[in-house]
Image 1: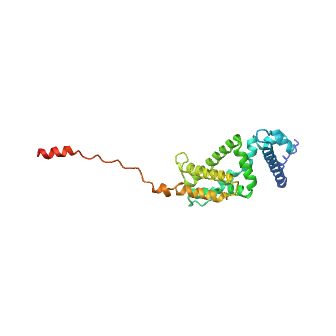
Image 2: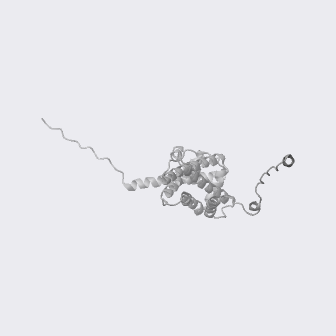
Image 3: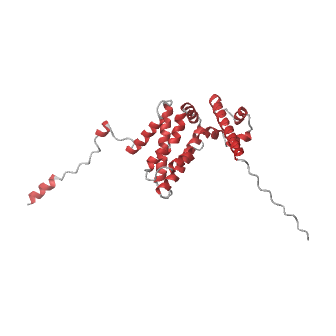
Length: 244
């Protein structure tokens, strides 16, 4: 009986590493072009009046390509903060375990601060645009809540506690990110003339000191008056003496 020739299965073709790298760089370039075009159009025409078609036409790509990178107009504007959550998470996880949680959170915010300070003009315009657009402002607030939950999970692991039973991880994460948001608001209000990093350091110091310690007149103000004790009835004592 003749044996049938064996057919070897062809090995799966692997894409050369340099081809994969080129494709990823091209995708990142398209993503950046969409973000840049959207930002320019939002600034010149306004967020609400600019359509997704306006954005894709300016970059000469399809709507399908747009939605491959972003879910909505809000997301393309918030794309400037991409990977911020992961960068903060990794920075917090890398802090020494014996460092107090509040201090570790301050160091984990360094990447966010650098993004603002390295490109003040763009980040100031971006933040003003976000805060003047209710839909995007709401989305940014939701994004901050997601950041807080991610950071709280890392803090819970550092503290070796159950995040559902121990208040501290969420408390520290939310307080730290509230300091960040408050400092950015003041930074925006001054037209980026003040140093953001310094304002954030001040915020952490204020919280550690009790936020608003009493000073001046407030410190000298007398406390609440104690109620007077009722004086004993003199008539009762006089009657007792006469009875003797």
